[in-house]
Image (cartoon, rainbow, N blue to C red; front, side, top):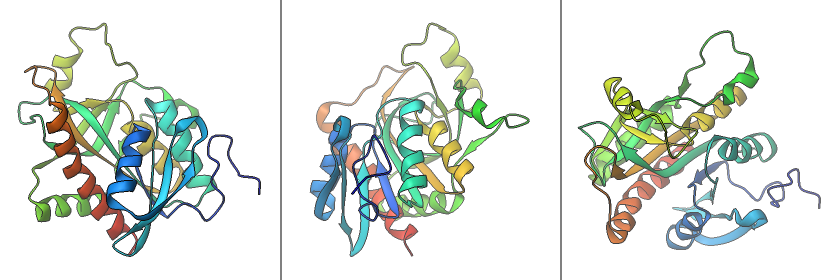
Length: 240
């Protein structure tokens, strides 16, 4: 059977209505193997692994999205538009900016400021705000409370470059209340808004650009589990 995408070999019906998306496809494999029951791999194209299984009796999928706005924009557009996905939750790492944010903390992105020009394609007559779906956000915050996880809700910055030549950028982000830096959330939120779908980004602080703190491999694994569990509970709830 021909698939609707050159980047995803899944057949229609093989992907759930709710999808968790880490940047690293190996993290998608980890989620599938450790949290989903009877996971089946639906995509190996470009090694962007995707799996569908069940979580607490409900069909759920997880798939990598790669690095940067163009990559997450491509994969999420196809999931929403070609495969009937309703909700996508990004689970990724971020660099802390605000004083209130520390390594191991979870950040739930209310909105994303950005230097990306991804939204220029929409010819929106103004500056289009990249914002989360409120229902998913509220559900994630409640899940964090139930799980006893410290979660900060606020604005992040989606950067088009990992290495920024502007040495003053970090201080400016901080001045405007940005909690953390990452590279994909704005693209996810804009894509969901344009297609009338739901999206949320849940991030773990892996390092802090001002304090120099960073997670050890073991701490990273443990902290990412907290983020994954919040996302799983949120995705499960979205299927009500």
